[in-house]
Length: 197
Image (cartoon, rainbow, N blue to C red; front, side):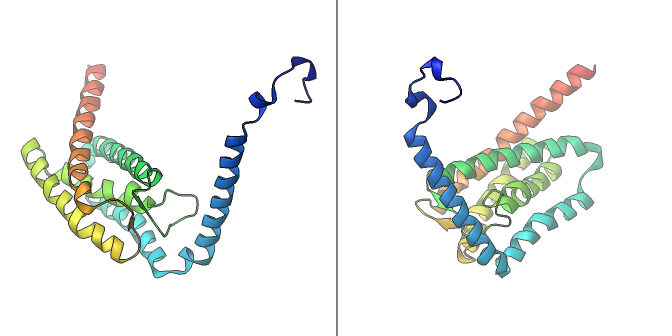
């Protein structure tokens, strides 16, 4: 380190060759992904499908959301988006699945699903099924549709690629996510009410 030659810092502390190699590979991967997006993804009809999946649920939700529970429902939706994005990122990192096409080169691989469509579907169930029993039953049905209908359609459209993952692995996850998020949302809402009184 030329700035502080008298500190005698060993070179290993200044640069890590392993990390430098990973950084270089990440840079190359990023350039390849950007080129793929510019010359492939952006020119497919599936790009328009991704765009529609990112915008249409927001428009519909704005029209049907219960204004009396607006903040509570949005908290539920944001928590759902955070958890689904975490699981999606984990699955990609573990090479369980991947997404060939992206809406934006800088976004999560399946931004329209993780941030918009999936939370939208769970929000509708959360809004319309107020008691726990109906909520759980509705989410079991939704999980079946997501796992065994929507995921195969996404694979067929080449928007989702299974590597080592199977559709039936998703089924329990699609059930657990909204249950955990509903529990967490009720805790946050109750905590907020306690602070106000």
